[in-house]
Image 1 (cartoon, rainbow, N blue to C red):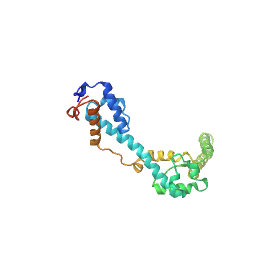
Image 2 (spheres, rainbow, N blue to C red):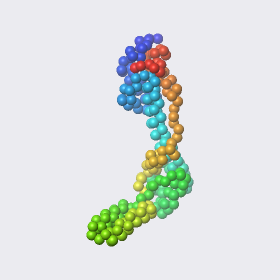
Image 3 (tube, one colour):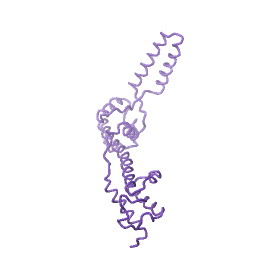
Image 4 (spheres, one colour):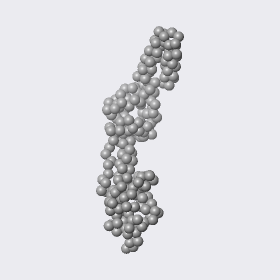
Length: 223
C-alpha cells in the first residue's frame, strides 16, 4: 500500500477537494467555502458536516411532513382520496367557493393550527382603505363625520377579512410551505444524525482516497 500521504498535511488541495466533494454527495449536503475555511481539524470538519445535515435535512423533512399532515386533513375535510392530492393540486379546485369557509375550518381543526388562508376580494380592500384614508384627511375639516368614516372603514375591513373567500395561495404545496414556516414545531420531524456515524464515514473517505493510515486521521488531526 502506498503511504505517500501518510501525513494529512502533505495532501494537496485538489486531493482534499475531491474528498470534500464525495462527502457532499454521500450526505446530500452543500458545504460552504467559509465553513470549510474555519474547519481546521477533523473534529471541526465533522461538526460542520453534522450541522449541515441536521439543518438541510430537517428543513426538507419539515416541509414534506407538513404536506402529509395537510394532505390527510384535506382528504378528510373534502371527502377525497388522499392519493389524489399532490403538491401541485390547486387549492381553488380542491376547496370549492360554496362551502370554502367550512372546509378550511375543518382542516384547521384537524391540524390544530390557523391557516389564515382566506382574504377578501382585492377591490374591497382598496375601497375600504381609500375610505379610511379619506376619513383621516377629513379630520382636518369636519372631525365628527371623519371619526364616523374611520370607524365605518375599519369595521368594513374587519368584516371583509372575516368573511373573505379568496384563497391567496395557489397550490397545496404552497400551503405546506407556509405551514412549515409559520408552525415549525408542529410540522417538524426528527432528522438528527449520529455524529459517530458521520465521523466514521468521513474518516473512511479520507483514509481511502488519500491513502492515509488510520493513525493519520484522528479527531484532532489538523489540515
